[in-house]
Image (cartoon, rainbow over all chains, first blue to last red; front, side, top):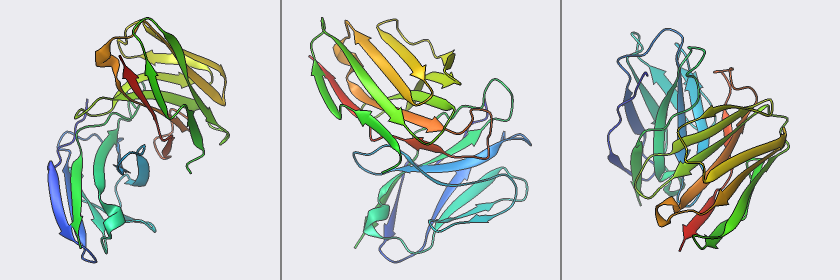
Length: 112
Length: 115
């Protein structure tokens, strides 16, 4: 299985940008990079995903390294509501192994 | 509100009880999933249904029995559970199990306590 490595925790100040890293050195050419976050007492929610090119949406940006062995989720201005556990997930392109499997994620703390 | 609704939100049951967790989505999705999230552990994928057919069972004990009567509803039947089964049970759905370019939607979960 392709796996991801994320720091256990990170801290940010409110209204500052946050860069959440993810390493996936064994990624294959057909794997999509997905990011989800889980706020306290809630189910995970989708943030963003991409394959090769950088992606932007209303929640965040995803920067994918040229060799695709790492990616960074960028929150442009952190708010207190962004405090959550952020999961970087590879969706395996092989036929029998493309369901989402979660790791431990990065717990983001946002300080006022 | 994600469009995936789980009931009940909280459940306390004895080890000899039989209970069921319900998940409902009206997003027109073809794939539905059960996950288990124990304290201080990552989410564990339990079951996957695609077009109402169970396509994956990740070595889950038989005391957990899923049912998918139609594409909008998913149940998890619980029987003779153990205290270590206490966890947050999350349901999710996605448009198509094989489309990697789409997102999954999660419910808020059922917090289960086995006493």
